[in-house]
Length: 292
Ligand code: G1P
Image (cartoon, rainbow, N blue to C red; front, side):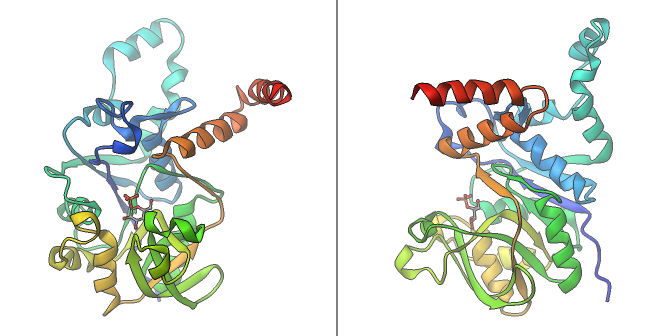
């Protein structure tokens, strides 16, 4: 059986970034750079690698830098051309040739579920991905490309998942279910940020989802949950009553780049993998470690 393909991705990007203050006071957290590109650029590269060509970014006040980043920059482009340095923006402009980006504003920070619902009109009646750019995932094939395969197999919503320390369940949506193929479970229970004592497992939702459009109706019906916010996880629980949902343990490394330690880990590991910097940076780290 063939299911409608996943052509669109919603990027909730209206959050206040309070975990990263003061850096995020006037700069969107999605614009924090890992080596030389902002987090959101890595995430859009990831969806493009999964064959998704339409990106819907849900922004809010103070997020203008995201729109400016994914636009032409006449003065800078002219300057770079005059100085033979146009190649410095090649990867960014090449990405813009592959995806079409639309923006919609979330006027109030009412939660992740509410942010996703802001994309409803632009998504329409088809399956779509949701990507949280502060979960940075290094994987080949990309995490979303792996998830599209699971979606194509089952024709149902898929959430990315990862085992976490049992003590950390309060930071994540947690799922439980029965095995349904390689690295895949069919979800039976799902709960947003449970205390370790109440968590049904230690399998945590990571910020990548492929969702069926019926989810939008559930978001409209759901009451505020954890933190008083409209939670995506609660809408998924409601969807579970009449549709299957799968959790997929992707292969790859995930960095919680919205957290200071996770951001530093991502910076170090992406710098080590960087063609231009990797060797020098490795030598520097070795020298540093020898002196510790
Ligand atoms: C959100 C979701 C949570 C998920 C997490 C992944 O939480 O609500 O279910 O586990 O993203 O990063 P947030 O980190 O926005 O509080």
